[in-house]
Image 1: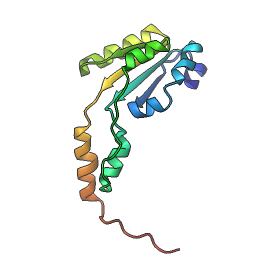
Image 2: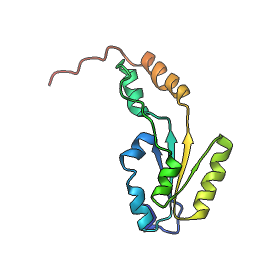
Image 3: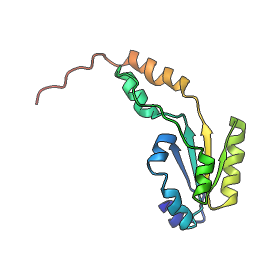
Length: 139
């Protein structure tokens, strides 16, 4: 929000995961009240993805990492912002361009499948990292 306040002539976009967004989503009210030009891109996977990946690499059980989301388009509208959901990758760029052109606070929601990331960030890392981890040297 500060970037939009300091540089109102520039395009400002926040890129958030759905879990991270919901931790501070009430700030939509502030952005709308201040009449900011701000696009918020929500990457939606219904999970705390980064935490899940880090825990999976260390063989921790997957517990409490998935959740349900509200309808983010309606959520944005409830705060007086505009919202749109992208249904296919070809729609992403036009949705972002439209959001910037519209001005005001705009939420763009893009569902994502992280299954390829799971292979790269968990399976491949597990085979490259020493396991079990080496003990820390004594001080």
